[in-house]
Image 1 (cartoon, rainbow, N blue to C red):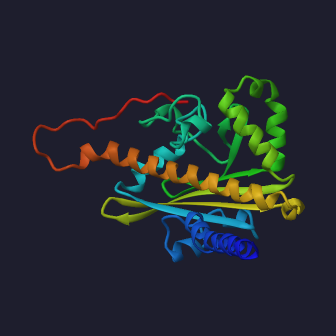
Image 2 (cartoon, rainbow, N blue to C red):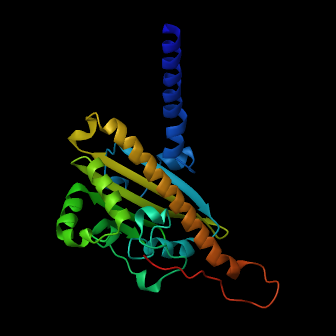
Length: 258
């Protein structure tokens, strides 16, 4: 009996150690080299001393100028998030560039739901886009859009309720999208999510909710980066492929904006 309990405890301990040493570092730095993971990126200075900093990257066979429009038009009610639409959308993310959503400036809101979302903190065309959110913005947006939120789709109400219940009272977060020109028509897209929690970060519930939220962020971001890559490469490919016959216009799959 005692041997069985000790064996079970050892197995659980080994599993937890494996998760902390292998699995968690993998999803917190998916697709990036050690250099990319640790070097400074635009937006880092906005939340100094972040307790969580997750960096992910992907190489796209398209130049930065062809990737940038997909970033500019992101958001609920715009082109979508190119991720798991059942979670964060009403409808499907767009499969084409939407001219009506190509205008974005510092201070604009990039919506995550009908009542608000991230605020553009910094941007440089073709190079980087830094989004920002904190607890004060969440409360202000919620109070201003209470009636609108009541009419939100069920999936967004559920996701919003989870986020509201899981968030600590105080937090500051940035979400940076950085484009680096690799030459030869290729772009490196690096995303970094940084967050600093207030005094409640050490409460017992955070030991369980924060890892769950962190993995959820990873799953959504990974799907998003793959979605951006596939869209940029698919739209560009017909125009850059070697000519084998009469020229044809780039094929675009018409998608419905959120």
